[in-house]
Image 1 (spheres, helix red, strand yellow):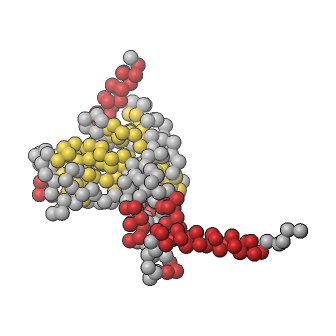
Image 2: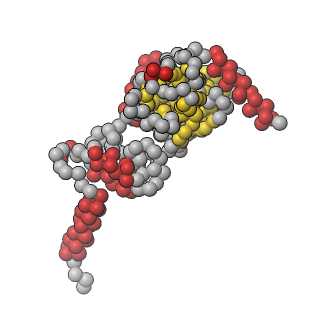
Image 3: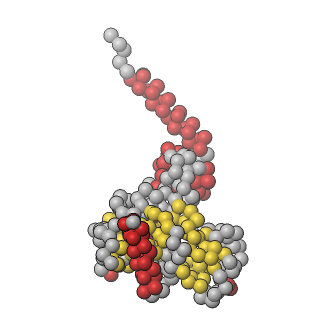
Length: 288
């Protein structure tokens, strides 16, 4: 009984948030002649968390818009979101990967998903289908599971998808929970740097090299984020991610070097290991 009442209260307050909020600066969705979906920006930061009724820390900004069918989205298309990274948290000048918060996404139909520091990938969350209404616009509610989330900025890396279309490039939503304007600007910059890395640069050192290959190899076939080799943001480390790494391979000291094949690198590592063992044996003093 109490659970039912609480769920109804959440739904009521979430609906109130959607009705009360201005549209703000929406994510404008379009598609080109190649059926590639695009958004009009890579970073959106107009979502500000508000405490409603003392129990919900929530926002429904930014919204999502298709201005008209000339932007390449066919009527009746269901637009969806992929969440392609964990929930990031910025506080006191530092991007953190250890937020204890869970962010719930709720669409106009009442469907929901949860995103946390442990999220790797969540695909196909529906925004809503695009009907023939000019200036189509929908909101998703973003609501913390706890009303006491720490002050800071929270970042969520997303994609827009639809059947028959190529997914959009990644875009970043930055939500403000109690930061002043100057702090938010710094947070947006830091979160953007943390999320938009050189493709294949797993260790974020600005160079795509053998160290990044090692990270990829160590996590092969694991379900992890791009920081562990999932360079194409599909939730699993596999050969497609190796291709991303290889296409961007450019170590600082060997900028013009040929890209090594995985077998070549493995053989080189094994060979180096055997040489090290042999050298160690040569240096070992005889047993008395």
